[in-house]
Length: 213
Image 1 (cartoon, rainbow, N blue to C red):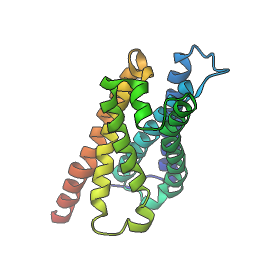
Image 2: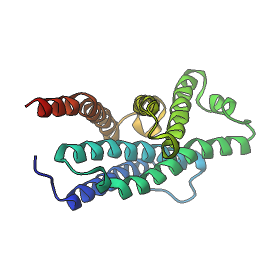
Image 3: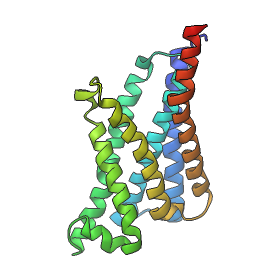
Image 4: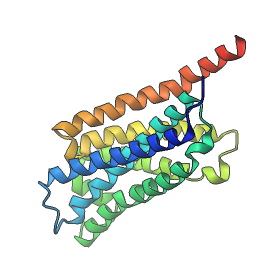
C-alpha cells in the first residue's frame, strides 16, 4: 500500500479531534439553551467528561487511520502529545471539580459525596468511572514503562476502560439521556469497537498474510 502524505494524516487527526470536541461542546451548550453565564461547577464538570472521552475516541480512530494508510508512528507524535495533555487535564478536573463543589456544599469528600450526589442506584456507575480513572492515570506511566514486556496489559486495561467510560457516561450523563447526542455516543462506541477489532485482529492478520505471500 502506498503511503499517504503525512500531512494529510496529521490534518485528519487534528480535524477529527476538533470536530469531536465541537460536537461535545454543542451538545453541552444546547443542554443549557446556551445560557452559559453564571453556570455552577455542577453544570460545567460534565463538559470535561464529554471532552475527555471524545478526544480519546479520536485517538483510537486516528491511530487506525495512520495504520491503515501505512504512515509512520512519528507522524502523529506531536498530535498525541498535545491532545493527550488535554485529555489528562479533563480527566483530572471532571471528578475533581465535582468533588470540590460537593465538599464546599457540606457533603463531605469523595467517594462518599459522589454517592450522595447520584444516589445508591447510580453509585455503581460512579465506581465504574473511578476504576477507569485509575486505569487512565496508570497509562500515563507509559513514558517510564512503555517498553517493558508487561506494558501491553496496561494497554489492554486502557482499552477496557474506554468501554467502562462509555457506559458510565451513558448511565449518568445528563446530556446523554435523550436527543441527538445519545446517537453520537452510540456511534462512538460502535466505531471504537471497530477500531479495536482492526488493531488487534485485522491488522495483525494482514501483516501475517503479507509475510507469507
